Length: 202
Image 1 (cartoon, rainbow, N blue to C red):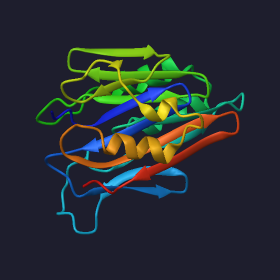
Image 2 (spheres, rainbow, N blue to C red):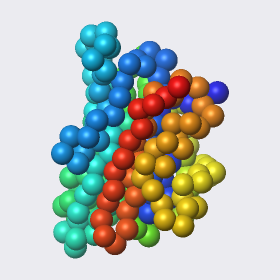
Image 3 (cartoon, one colour):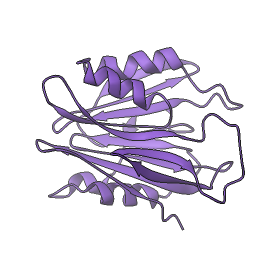
Image 4 (cartoon, helix red, strand yellow):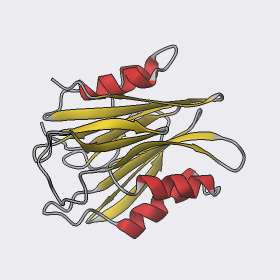
């Protein structure tokens, strides 16, 4: 099944995967602590505005709470900025998603995102037909196609005794959905945020 891009979040851990039929020549890179999706050196040139974007960021709130943001587009940055200003996770997700709306491409692709704290997680999606933002206690997925409303997801990385960002990225990259490209993972504990990525799609 092809679900497109998707995020999975749970308290303390989150991940994001690029799945693509149209633009498979992409990878995640670490740019000063922000994970960015962009074209590989051999990728064909494109003017598509949705191909490159920050997909995972570490945040510190005004009360010094560490948080991670994961998502599938340019909304990741304003979500992070709202959190840094002290917005609650629900509002930090809802405000940019509503403002930027679904992607204006041929498929009206939803924007998806999650905010992960050490003990909390919140997931959001904006589609042509609505906006959903939910606080979640268990691993939850939302995708751009098919699974475009939050639903429970079996995420082994969330059950690990010591959650690992790299393991989260690798698990999502190997998930049984079509056209994997690359993935990013994040873990959050009282010590801060750890980000990792996996570009080794087979």
